[in-house]
Image (cartoon, rainbow, N blue to C red; front, top):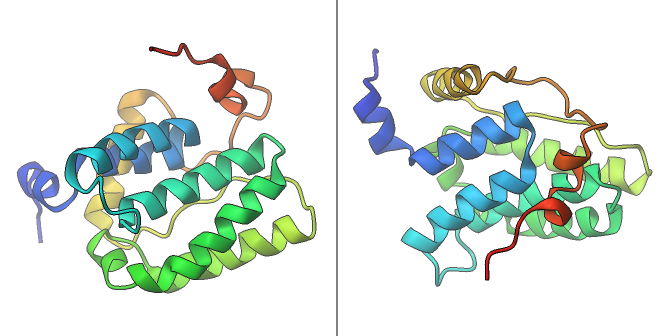
Length: 167
């Protein structure tokens, strides 16, 4: 089945596709948070249990882990594991494999518990059209889909300290 660009936009919000491209391509987890938070504020801001908040928390856990804040990462991963059941029905609608994602979060938690250093991982996208769309966006941005984080890039690793605040 061929899926048109218009259908992809209808099925998946543009912000979600950008979130996935940042998660898998730029590895800019801070930007993952920014993109989805803006979307969440537009569509579901009163719902703290929103799937968008849950996905943001996964990205923020990755951000904390990469910059050496394993305690913060562990807190968020545990929260995500507890709340995963709330989102089981939504994950396939977002093109993700819920069982594999739960296993990945468990492995993430175990790695944090054993103090193994950060490593990049990919969300389990099962919708091949979505995957293609995310890969195309990564290509458009000039980044490789699935490549590991550049741990020497302090602007990426410590982005929250380097961003310009607007008040």
